Length: 474
Image (tube, rainbow, N blue to C red; front, side, top):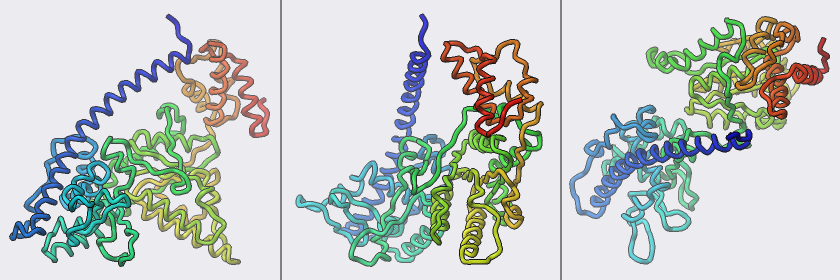
C-alpha cells in the first residue's frame, strides 16, 4: 500500500513519539525512586532538628552522622547530576531543600502545621516563610544552615560562609538566593529563599537538558544541525584546528586541575572568512559531537546606543551562561567587536570601555566562546591575541566545490546520471550557496513526486542564488 509523503511523515512521527514516551516514563520512574530516597533523608533530618527545638532531645545531633543515600551505582538525571558536578553532602541538602517546594512541599509544611486555624512559623531558628497562599513553607538560607549545624553556632557560621563563597550550586546560579519581600532587614539570612533555577527543576525531575528562557532576558537562539562532518568541506588545516578545540573540551578540565588552576579555563575562538564558508556549520558540528548546546547570540538585543546598557546586557548574558557548559556563538560579530579607535570623543571612550569589559568577561567565561566575522581586519591586534584559536574559512576551491555538490545532496534524492560535477564546480559558490541551490532543486523534484534532481531545476536555482548577490552566472 502506498502512502503520500505527508502520511509517511505522520506515521514516522507517531512511532518515534511512542518510543520517546516510553523512554521518558522509564527515566521519570527510575529518577523518582532516587529523589524519594533523598526526600526521606531530608525529612529525617528535619524531624531530628524539630525534636531538638521541642525539647524532646537534649543531645546535639551532628550532620556528619546522617549521610545522604549512596548514589554510586544509581543512574538517572538526579544521581548523574550529583556525581557529574561532584556535589558534596552539604550541597546535597541545599539541592533537595530547593527542590521539595516544587514536588513535595508537605516535607516541611505538614511538620510545621500549627492547629486548625492555619500555618505559622513556630520555630524562628528554623527560618523560612510561608508563600503568598499561606499553604506551603518555603525554606531559606537560614533553614538550610540550621538543618546543617543546629545549635552549634560555629558550625552554622561555617556552613553559611561555605555556601556563600564556595558552593558550586550558588556560584553557577543553579541555585539563587533571593531576598524575600518583607519589612525586615534584607541582609537577614531568614529573608533569602533558596531557589532552584526553573530549567534545573525540569532537568532533575525528567532529565530534560537545562536551557535558558529565550527573549530579551537571554538574547540567544539554540542552533542545531542534521549534517555531519562529512558535509563540512574545508581545508585539512581547518579540520585540524577544529579537532584541537574538541581536545580542549574533552581534556581541558583535567588540564586545569592538573596544573592547579594556573591556566585560564576559558577557550575563545575566532572564525573568519566569507559568508557561507562553513563557520556556522562548524560551530554546530562542534556542539553536536561534544553533546553541548550552541547558542547564537542576537547582537541586535545586546548592543545598545545607551551608555552602560551594552555592558549590562553582556553581564547578564555571561552570568546566565556561567557553569552551564554552553557554546556561545557571536555570529557576524563586527558590530560588537569592531576596531577600537583612538579616543577623540565621549562615544569612543564608552566604546573602548565596552570592549574592555567584553574582553574581561570572555576571559572569565568557563567554556567555549566562538566569534564569527567576515573580515578579520575589523578586529584589532590587541583583541586577536586573546583568542586560543583563529581559523580562516576560505571560499571553497573547485575541487572542494565538487565534493560539496556530491555530499550536500540528502538521501533519497539523486542527480541525473548525465550531470557533470566539474561543470557545476566552475560556478564560484560557497557551501552555503550550494546548500540553498540543492534545497530549492529538491523542492521542485518533490513537487513532481520525484526524487530525481533535474538539471533545469539546478540551473534555475543557480541563477536565483547569483541574483541574491547581484551577480550573474557564466
